[in-house]
Amino acid sequence: MPAKIIVVMSPKGGVGKTTTAVNIATAISNLNKKTLLIDANLETPHVAVYYGFVGFKYSLEDVLNEKAKIEEAIYTGDNPNFHLLPSRVIKSSQDKSAYKLININIYLEKLRDKYDFIVIDSKPSYDIEFIKLIKEAKSLIISNPDITSIIEAKKLKEELDEAGIKIMGLVVNKVNSRVKEQMTEKEIKEMTGINNIWKIREDHGVYNALRQGIPIVLSSQNSIAAKDITNIARQIIKI
Ligand SMILES: Nc1ncnc2c1ncn2[C@@H]1O[C@H](COP(=O)(O)OP(=O)(O)O)[C@@H](O)[C@H]1O
Ligand SMILES: [Mg+2]
Image (cartoon, rainbow, N blue to C red; front, side, top):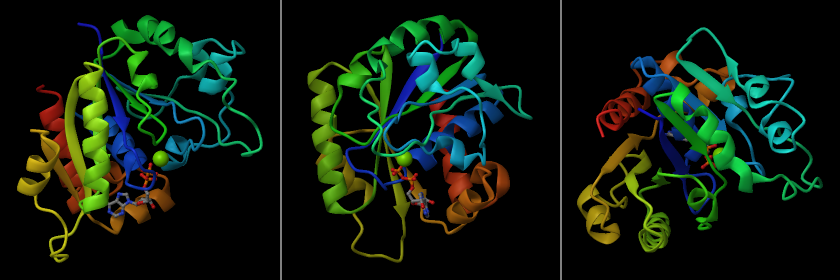
């Protein structure tokens, strides 16, 4: 079967999109599924940072600009089930719009038979033009449990529905049961109309993991965030 492609999306930055993409991809690969994680957030690419991975030779930009073959920009570590196609942090003055993300599907089609899952971190936006480029991609929306974040998630959901793009689920990140003002799962479901609502609890271990450059599902498997994320990965592989 060709790889299932999951595009991790959110209207706003800072909600935990990259944290979720990195840890879900890592957790899926730990469940024995061959997984490729792609950093397609060219403007604020942080995926490699979450793996403490620096000094790589080629990145997605080099592939899009035909300076490298895609195989040359895909890296692997201790886990043979996990591959990474990073993007490069560069000065903001450098215009990344020249990179031909429009061709992404051509590259993905070449890779589809090699993986069970391809997880893509994308730039924060309502812009659904990117996911529309990718054949049979499903969206995983990330938000926080506050009303403004949920309103934005609902708007994105409506855009995706109109374009006929399937939504795998909504991940509500940084849930903290001590904060009574946070929206409940029932409220979020009613407001967004999304059936699959998954939560990741707020966990300071996520910051530690980022400092160490090791995803929390590997560095601290018993932490609450790692348990929540692994649980989501188990459900995703069954969908
Ligand atoms: N569940 C969580 N608990 C605590 N901190 C989190 C959690 N998820 C993400 N963070 C922190 O929030 C910040 C933003 O996360 P990030 O994944 O980079 O967001 P985005 O990609 O949406 O901009 C990071 O410092 C990250 O460590
Ligand atoms: Mg990010």
